[in-house]
Image (cartoon, rainbow, N blue to C red):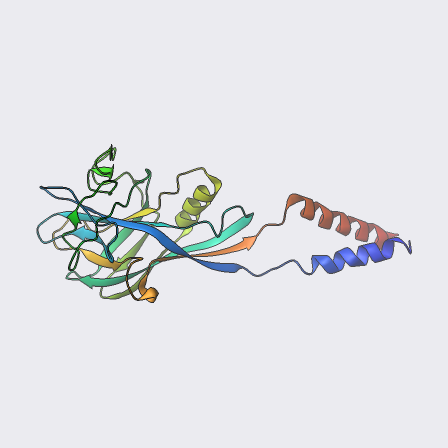
Amino acid sequence: MRCRTPFIVSLAALTLTIPATADLVSLQSNRIGTLYETNGAPLANGLGEYLFAGVTNQNFRRRGLLDFDLSPLSGQSIEILSVTLRLHMSQTGAGPESIGLHRVLSDWGVGSTDASGGEGGGGPATPGSATWTHAFWDVTPWQTAGGDFAALASASSIVDGVGSYDWTGSELISDLEGMLAGEVGEFGWILLGNESAVGTTKRFDSMFIDNAEFRPELVVEYTAVPAPGVLALFGLAGTRGRRRRRG
């Protein structure tokens, strides 16, 4: 028994060092775009400072695309506790509107369009741009004009005046888990505003805005999951400890 005691004490001490607190990481956007509905030439804005969601005063729909760099979480065994998308809304003529966040189902491109002015009108589409009709203009069309995305929103938020807004919930956790596991594509999300009325557009700051505090971020809270071999080792320590106490 004297030979076993140091082994048991050592494992018990090691068990106490398992982290019980969650980690927090802020993931940065790595591509953005806006789908501009138009009755003319295709429009895009993959390098602009803004993205849009809603319907313009001219009754054209706008849908914002954004994706994030997930590499800080890739290859890890983790349990995701919460996911929060944070955006800064910088301009609107509308009152409170519900903005839904839907997971995108198809890959999409950025191109080289950088719209001028307030960017609400977009700019001429360039090869590889995401447009209303194409995921990659003018080679790969969307299956449905306006983008391929999940019918149900993963999260929604009421957006009113200028300021920062959050989208969060269990469905966003499911989205991220699926992306990290390779079960669904890493194509990001699309912002859908109120498309049942005219003049509902909201403008959000993108990854290219000068003020870094206003750039999109995906805040993920998670805990590390010990490898199965480590868990088995701790279980063995507990068993041996209990047996010793009974003896």
